[in-house]
Structures are given as C-alpha cells and as structure tokens.
Length: 120
Image (tube, rainbow, N blue to C red; front, side, top):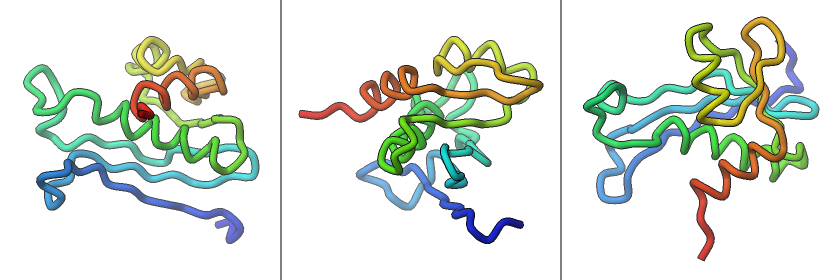
C-alpha cells in the first residue's frame, strides 16, 4: 500500500438526528484527483420507497467539493458496477473511461457542488 495516500471516510447524517447514518463515503486523496473507494446509502435510502432522496448524490458532490479544495479541479474517479454505468452518466455527468472506471470532470463536478451545496 502506498503510504503517501490519504484515505478519508465521511458519514452523512441529518441535522435533527445525527446518530442515524444516512450514507457513507470513503475517498483516497490521489496525486491529482480524488478516488471514491466506497459510496453507500443506508438500506432505508435505497429503492422506490427510500426515506431520503439524493443521499448518494450528496456524498458524490462532497467528494467533488474536496477535489476542488485540494486543487484537483473537481476531478473524481470511481469504479462502477457495470449495471450502473449508464445511470452515473445520466445522474452525475460522469463519463465512462475504461472498463468500469468512471470519471467526473470539472464541469460535472461544479454542477454537483452547486446542486448540493447551495450558497446563500
């Protein structure tokens, strides 16, 4: 394992109930981008009867935000499950790079950050 890489984990909770985890994100700070190792929504936030919309999108937007903060121009990469590649292209603006690798570029990353982190 490369000891120069930094792995960070985040949990998404809601303001009035911080003890219940809505979703999890694990990222690796690479040399020139963020790599999402893990992105999971709580079981009650998956499917047609989910409790909250946008849990995964919110976590991906956070990875994009970290990428901008680290000077990586919003670049985020991840490995998609094959059946979700088209979904990620449509919902995240990611593009299919090679095999199951997906990349979110600067423009798509900016859109996600603006959508989920509205400034007042």
